[in-house]
Image: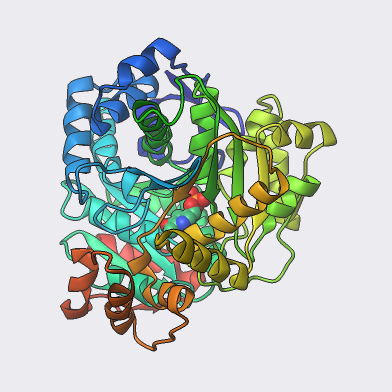
Length: 494
Ligand SMILES: *Cc1c(COP(=O)(O)O)cnc(C)c1O
């Protein structure tokens, strides 16, 4: 399978797309066409383990990788998850399910892909005959950074550097990153919010001058952000797996269409669901859930994407994003795969903070997507109601999705389509906010929050979070966003 850029120009292999991360003209790599999964293949996948299912989906796109190696990598990756099933589907209510994607080493859904990406990247370098040292640069709104650090720590021939917005991540997220172990890792705080951080990192990727300097040091850049197809591909797998689990537990018939509600920031997770649908998975609608930073909700309603608005710091920090990078891939599809138009829109976004799609395109998007958002109070309310009604505890990001799903139910009382709400983080990752939502108790300290939340819910505390308290902090540096490349140079010279 070949990959093309959303902004035209380049055609590459899957391995190359993963190693390079971003196309030279700033576009994102997308498959030349969507591979399909037939009903018979779905049937065949019913009896498979999660790593087998994931390998099957990955091989559809990455056919130059060898299947055995990929399966071994998936088995090793998902063995790092707690419990037997890395992505269990939990029944919440009649026709309503939660897909739990937070059982990985860092307790957020990013682990689903970032435990596999190091293999995809290393193998990709072999396939492409790349000899340079790889430097993975990551801009994170909190969860990607930690998951990438954990995935790449002590990997051969790779260094990883993570930038996070100084005041934009939760205390637990910051602690997780700043205590990271490993010889090849570095973490730097950036003055500004996530968009500033992401824009600064993207500039390093697209700067000829910077890349030339790196080449002189025998270093090549790669990305672990969700713009990398190597992030997207493993995410497609869990939509298939969730569907298959519902079939095998007799909740749905094979072929029956279902809905997903996805808490969304950079549009990576929900885009993977759209890809699954394009491949033939029976998905009816995708509900895109935002927090107060509801740029996507507005876009889906009006067809205008406009970042000129207040930026809110919320209790769901991984969704505090105004520039949703992966939306570019959807725009490309919806435009009828027009690279020039896509490039034009992305340029409009860069120069004027705004672009729009035609009414026809907006209607096309609306055939699959709708969007809603939760303000801070809505989110607390949704988490509380679920806890009281069912005893289930969810994190703040999932709380936003819950609110959007409940709004859908209320507006569509006769709709009997089964709904899967995607849960993206372990509640203990945001202990104070979750504790407040389910008990009304306000505590000042995260670890006290964990203790009380455990007392209130009896839910097991993940070992990796419990241990954080006693880990030494290794990284304390804060940098100006204009000076990130200096940090990069310093790190590669070490
Ligand atoms: C990253 C993240 C999201 C947003 O996912 P996107 O792929 O960026 O849309 C939502 N919730 C949590 C907990 C996350 O870590």
